[in-house]
Length: 246
Image (cartoon, rainbow, N blue to C red):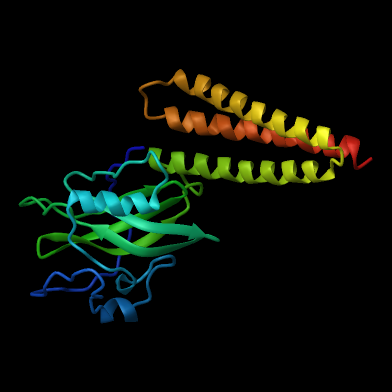
């Protein structure tokens, strides 16, 4: 999964001055009275919630590894590395730490705003030059399905829809399994579900392979997973209705 920079010139961000200050180390919270007192846009969190640390690439990779599922790699934003150990719960992003700065900004290279993509989270990270070191001042949750414009948002939206479909399927499957009293019948359903998972995954891979090498491949695969999963949910719901609810 790749990530790139994106211009967000229309976004208003509250910042404060750190002139002649020292780079804060991890666990040292910078004083930000302007941020604390300001009425920030909905969804923004003050910089004081985040800790800062200058990290080498190996340290960045270790921290990213805590937040990402197996198989995901650290993302490079030009010569900057930005990562967040964060989760999304009930639509609220909770950032434990924002880690940035693997390398110093090159002369004349301006800081900017970027999209940070985790499996279920898209966050907009505002980066400002701080004694030639980029620091993340704010983190804002973005709803990727509200108005998806970038590949990152489209992928995240597709992933969210698939996760919703998967939760619905699991709930329906458990309900049906709980209604079966015969052990052999239960074992047959369990095996059928395992076989279905293999078909689901291989079908999604097949459909996505038409786009091999393209940036849209993962989005096609995720959309296929969602579609097949919802179809399976409908099948199990029909079984529940026909066999138990009539």
